Image (cartoon, rainbow, N blue to C red; front, top):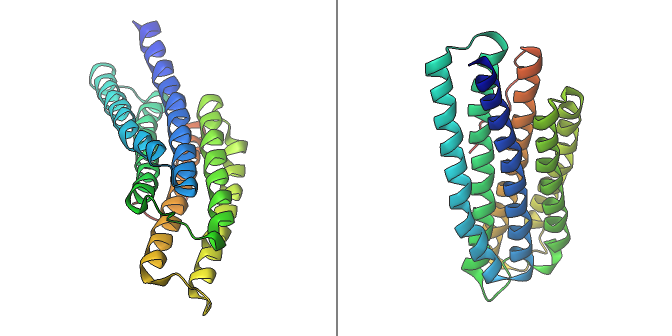
Length: 220
């Protein structure tokens, strides 16, 4: 019975790692769809979000079953509650990738991102992919040191987000209000994606150490 319980916990953890791969792939495709005005790729991201949602539902159900049947305490309880919170973060990251793809689809056949800020969004896409890949490694290895490093990496995303606002507030912004709204929303999606990756890393720190880190701003 105990071996089966441990195998179930390990498999749930593996599902979370697989989920980071799915989310990372969605973000990669969404960024390409956005920058290349690739509506077919945008549609793949939009449709693929259903799979991420189903994984989240499956992990939640399995965690609730373990709580009911095993009544875990101490580290095992933290493992289950952390998994339940982590899967919510990852599901929301998938939603944010889908939001980016929807902007690309909405503006097709035009490009949603003006030439002036394309390099910023390209960099934000790369940072987002790197963060979620690191989050997967942190989950798999329960690596507290890497979790702390991930928070520093998030600063790069914040700097790009600030750069977008400098561009938008410039007197030389030539693309009008509609484009400015798109850029504001898109920047927010990438920034929140990174915040959720930080949240995942902090949950692993709590799982390993039992110490709750300071909360980040409420994720949306």
